[in-house]
Structure formats: C-alpha cells, structure tokens
Amino acid sequence: MKVVILAGGLGTRFGKMTSTKPKPMIKIGEYPILLHIIKYFKSYGFNEFFIALGYKGEIIRKYFKNLKLDDVKIHLVDTGVKTMTGGRLKKFENLISDDNFMLTYGDGLCNVNLKKLIKFHKKHNKISTVTAVHPPGRFGNLDIKNSKVISFNEKHQLGESWINGGYFVFKKEIFKHLKSSNTVLELEPMKKLTKKKQLMAYKHNDFWQCMDNLREKKFLEEEWKKKPKWKKWK
Image 1 (cartoon, rainbow, N blue to C red):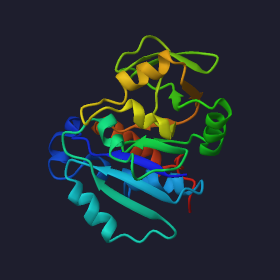
Image 2 (cartoon, helix red, strand yellow):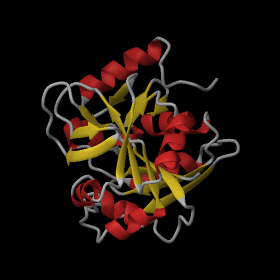
Image 3 (cartoon, rainbow, N blue to C red):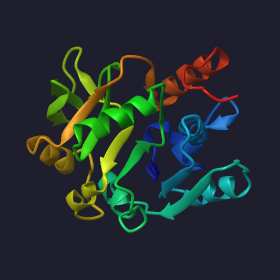
C-alpha cells in the first residue's frame, strides 16, 4: 500500500526556524521529523512514498537525493506553495491507482498499529478512516458513535473528546471529493463524507504528538533521548 505525506505547509508557528527550511525538515535528534515518519511506516513494511512538496520543497529534494534508504521508493511531487491539503492530495489522483492508500501529515509522530488500522479500514469498507487520538486542546474535534464519525469540526475541541490525529486510510474514491487546489481536506470533504456515513474512526489510545511549535519540538526531543514509542526500527 502506498503512503502520501503532506509536507508543503509554511510552518509559520516556528518563526525564524522555518525561514530557512520547511517544517518537515526540522530535526528530532539526528533525523528530520519527515524521516522519522518514513522509517515508522517502513517498520510496518511500507516501501513506496509520495511526498507532497510546497514551501521550500527544494530542500527536501536535496536531502533525499543524498540519502540512501534500502528498499524504499520515494516520489517527490511539487504540489504548489499555496495549495491547501485537499488540493495537494488531488495532485496524486493519476499517480495512485491502488484501491486503498494511506495519508499522513509531515509533522506528527505516533505508535499506532498500522496493520490493525488498515484491517479496521478494510473491514468497514468506507471511503475514509481517520486515526482518532486524545491530545491536549486546540485540535479538530471528532464526535464518534460506534466507530462512525458523526461530526468533524476542525480546530475546535471541547473537554476530553477525540481529535483528528492524521494517519488516514482512503479508498481512491476520495479523489472525487477533492475539487481544486483550494480544497481543504479537513473541511468540506470530511464533512460530506461524515454526512454520507463514509468516514470511520480508528481509536488510538497510546502515544501521539504533532510538532506545531518549539515547545512540542522540545517534547519530542526529550522523548527521543529516552526510548521513543514511535521508534520501531534499529
């Protein structure tokens, strides 16, 4: 199964740090977070990645040109600097012919069991499955009933609710719901899929952490110094 990684955003919350590099190239320990993500997928047997480039994409190109990864194919695709998340994914419509594929963001780490996630997705046979997690506030709220998402509200959270943790599995039908470069995946497409009962939630109760600011970067660096839960490779 192929993996799409969205790595084209501006990363504005990092200030000067992202004035010289895209956020997915910010390092946790000795590796850019983007490579942590790829290595995590590789530990589950995934070996073909489509990386959506945008802001300072040439830096990601240069990095992978000089990097040797055994048994891994990496396709670097320019999706535009100002393109929204759904628009970036839309660029891969003619590149991915598989019935199912995975998608994640280039700034989040977790220890979700990817085999179980895919099994869950195929069992329910819906267009989309999102990994639902329990992080600290300010994220998109998911109302879930019997593993079906009944409400998807980006950037709004109340109490101890589930949120969008990325790590999606999609059927190729998702492309029909992406209209243009301005389409935000987490808004209209997800809401329409929710109304059609085509969005499932795989609940993940263990480690998940995005890297939206310096505080979160420092947290991940401290985890890396220990025995990080997302490190399943040698």
